[in-house]
Length: 193
Image (cartoon, rainbow, N blue to C red; front, side, top):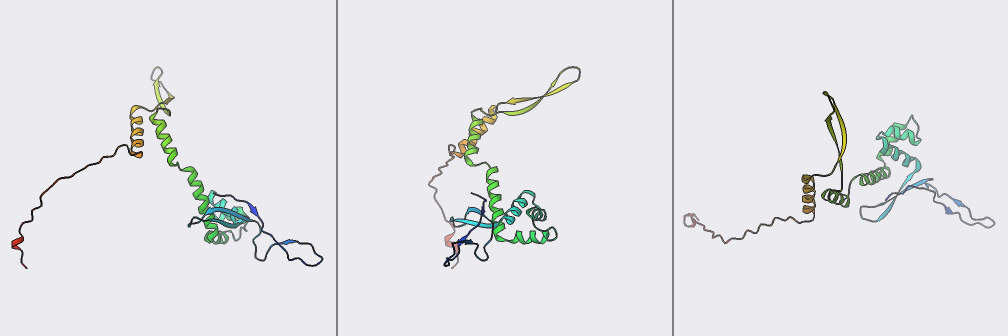
């Protein structure tokens, strides 16, 4: 989803008689752009353009959570680091980069459906082991702790089977309540118009 790379966009200078074609940076062009590839809200591909300093700031901010330190580490002046950090955090492009990076990092840390189902299946089949600590007596009032590998017991395997069954729709409680119940409305003659 994300690829950060240095990039300089150059365009050819107009040819003049007697001169070879040279490349120059167009006016107001950012030098050293960093691109972040992502999907827009509409689902289209888009690029987020950052200067290298902005990208360094954003990456340091993600690591430390401290905007002033991130600005200093990115190369901004210590004297104006607090002001620059505040402006950078309000910059929509920098915000978009930080949000996209955090989403990418979060998605790597959170288990997806396949991983959860694979884990539940391995517990059901008794393929996983957990580590437990057992305290044993070794003599006159002394004890010793040992670590043992324990396979899932029947209760844990049954719970894994239940969760898998629910996920796959194997246990559906369908109640079909159909009855012919007569409805009697009384007191209709006593109503006033």
